[in-house]
Image (tube, rainbow, N blue to C red; front, top):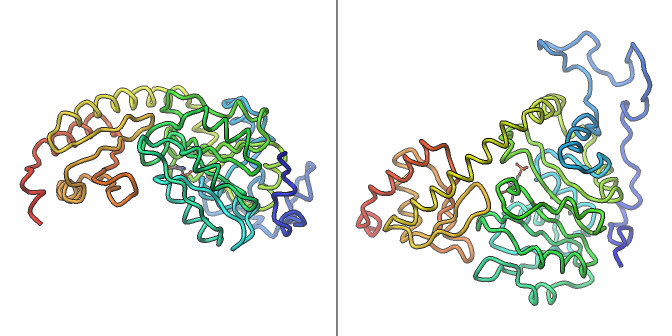
Length: 355
Ligand SMILES: *Cc1c(COP(=O)(O)O)cnc(C)c1O
C-alpha cells in the first residue's frame, strides 16, 4: 500500500513551512507595507517591486486548462532540476535511502542524488533501451524511495514501454517519476491522465523543449494533491520570478505556434534520420520519439571535433554506457539540418582515423 506519510523524511513531515507576507495577507488592500519592498517602484518600465505569487496560481490555472489537470495537482519548479531536487529532499534520508536510476539517462537525476547524498542504484536499460524489469524488481528494497523513468529517454530518444511503467506503478510502494520532457514529440501518450489511478505517480514536464522557453526556467510536476502540497512546503517561497510567470503565461497563449513547430520538428527529425542513415560514417540511427537523434558513428570524438571546426556543435555521448560511438543530435531548422548533413557528407573517413 502506498503511504506518503511513511515515505517522507521525518524533518519534512514535521516541517513548518516559511510563511511569507504574501501568504499571511490575502485580502484586498491599497497600501502594502508588509514585505519591506520598495514602495516607490522599480527602475524598469514594468514594475517589479512587489514579490511574486509564491504559488503561481495564474500560471497554474492556464496550465490546468491546457493539460486537463486541476491546478492543485501542479507544482512549478525553477526548471525540472528544482523538481528533481525537491523530490529527493522530501523523501530521501541522506546516506540511507536510495533512488533507482536506469542509465543511459538524463544526468541530473544522478548529480542531484549526489548533492543530496542519496544512495544510487543503477539498473541499466536493456540493449534495446527498455527497462530491465526483473533487475528493477531485484533492486527495489525498503529504502528505495524513488525511481526515475525518462520517456522519451534522453539520450536514447526512444519511449519506454508503457506496460512496463504500469507494472512499476502497480507494484512499487515508493514514488515513480516519469520524466516527459520530450512528450510533445512522442507517439506515446502522456501519463498525466493516469494521475487519478496511481497515488505514487509524479509526471515531470517542462517549458524548456517544445515550448521554446529554456531560458525562463519553468519545469512542472503533476501529481496527487498530497504530493504537491509536500513539494510546495519545501521549495523556496518565491522560486518562480514575476518575469518568468508573466512571460510563461504569455507564451502559453501561443499554443498554435508551438504545435506548428512540433509538427515541423517531427518532419525534420524523420528527414534527418533518413539522411544520416545514408552517410558512410553513420553505423546506426536509433528510432526517435523526441526532438533529437542518437546516431552511432565510426568515431564520435573525431566527428564531434570536426563539426566544431565548422561551427556546428552536437553532443558527444560516446562515453555513456550502451552509447559507444554515439552522437546526440538535436533537430534544428531545415537550413541547420542541411548544413549538418552537408558537413558530415564532406567528412573524410581517413581524417577520423589519424590519431
Ligand atoms: C531537457 C530536459 C529536462 C528539462 O530540464 P529543465 O530544467 O526544465 O530545463 C528534463 N528532463 C530531461 C530528460 C531533459 O532532457
